[in-house]
Length: 103
Image (cartoon, rainbow, N blue to C red):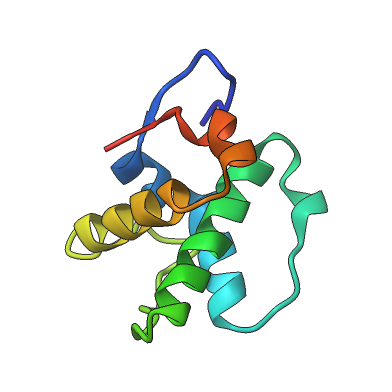
């Protein structure tokens, strides 16, 4: 999943990515961030952690998502909407990277 400035990615596709799910699960399990193992997909991993952090801060129950199998289709709309909320509530200096996610 490329993350270059010229590419758009849908939120549904982002939450289906293995790297995003690994970041989400990492936060849910209370693990420290592990960015070095993700090379060019660090942004996807961080968005997974950011989404889990937002849901946690809102008092939502964090769903257990599979990291090695495909994401359940019933989870996709909920997690994609949470990802969009998480990225839209970022400080102004982070908006340049966030504009590339489409609903």
